[in-house]
Length: 618
Ligand SMILES: [Zn+2]
Image 1 (cartoon, protein in one colour):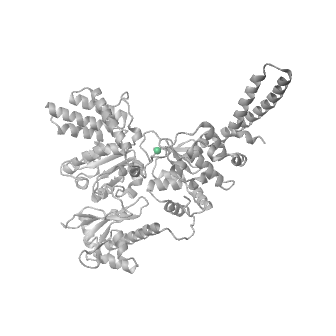
Image 2 (cartoon, helix red, strand yellow):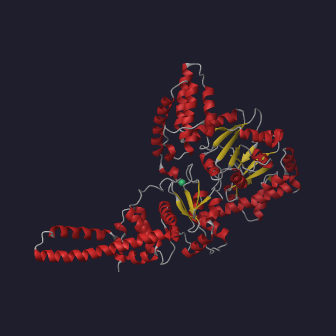
Image 3 (cartoon, protein in one colour):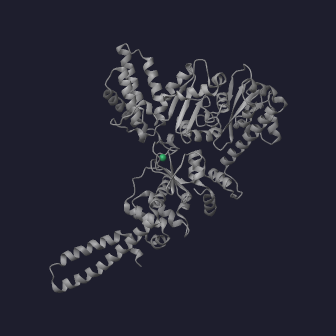
């Protein structure tokens, strides 16, 4: 996995990167002793088990088992390939990488990014030039501050069939590349290409690194479609990005809240009115991937909906999402827990509904920040919202309606991962339906069991970037674990023991891999430097866990264990000598204690073999 980069080079980068700062950009970290802790960005949890150790430059989640160094963190978080993560961190830490031929795929992504960056600048220039007057006029009519337009990098795609194509040709960027970037379209019935965006105000969509990966284009008049978006490209995967995430990141962290609206202009206007924690869901359904993105920055997510049909339709999407967002390990709630609706702090999504006929943009212009804030403050827990809808759609005056509502509520309940919220929901629903809450629970748990099984049967490739698999191993035995700790942390132990240790003697597959890697490592290497040499995620997670364990207990503890073993062996050796002597004497004198002495000897010999530390006693 070292991916063509030398170990010293990777070490250099790793040692220069401030992992607290890197992780802290997306996780709210609090200092806890020599570690920092926060909510894991890779699985859903309510108490922090995500741990970062700045001294070693590593992280580990005790909840889902994910772990690694700065490279692994960036790869996992931003879904990057290893070389890409190395490049970004090298860049940030001022380490110069040797100029070498990048792999083909990497080269392709790089050229797409370059094309997008050049196009974004071309559109920005056009907006602020003479030809952009019409677009600027439109923005002003819509109440967009020109300062905000600049901050968001808005652009103008000039009218005409190929202004972008001819501009790019001067930069030696060909038509095929522009087609791959979603910026140009091949003519259908004639040779040639034309610009995808023509005569539209453009909203650039950026990835988490702030690089433009797509555009949304708004027509100025009544042209169809009103909004034209980039197609999916290798850089832009719908449902995995949020508009303005890069701009809103700071605001979300400060306010510990994320506001999700539907449109670009809604988002811009929200920022303009001080709601700097606002992102837009980019026209697609709000996905669980998007929710987990937001959860890295804020604990509370408020989804804003219009009061009209489009907003209501969202209910069923949200209902579905409830189950998808949740990690399967969190599904085991119990009936005994209690809670109330008012205290719905565990499930992060709230729903704010706008008054009839308003979207965020129009509401902000009509009532200003206080009007919008009032709606955000009145946001309901998604569960409460969905329950109201569900009950509202059935006629509870009839037996049939009640029974339909009952079934729907049980289904909803089965998807709620949090005990307190589930309990509160069951109580409220039971009260409204006039049924026994226990009955609802039983049905919900049956449904939950059925779904749990079918989910486990899902093909593994749909989980490619999830944390599944990191914990596929059982925990190692204490003996193997302690020995590995010694090897990792005490140079002397490594030198003394490694020659005697055989991989096949180790029961734990992860530790076996660690041992193999350790053997290949040059003498004196810091254990965290093994990260990039390990074959997979699971192995890196295991190493991070071992390194953190050490950090927790401080070096002293291991030294003690180490010495303890050493003395233990000495004592055994002494007893061996004594026993041998006693046996010889017993044999000579016909002492009846002979069999018991021989038994003790055998036992000691067996134990001595098992205690690998034996060889330390040189
Ligand atoms: Zn985790």
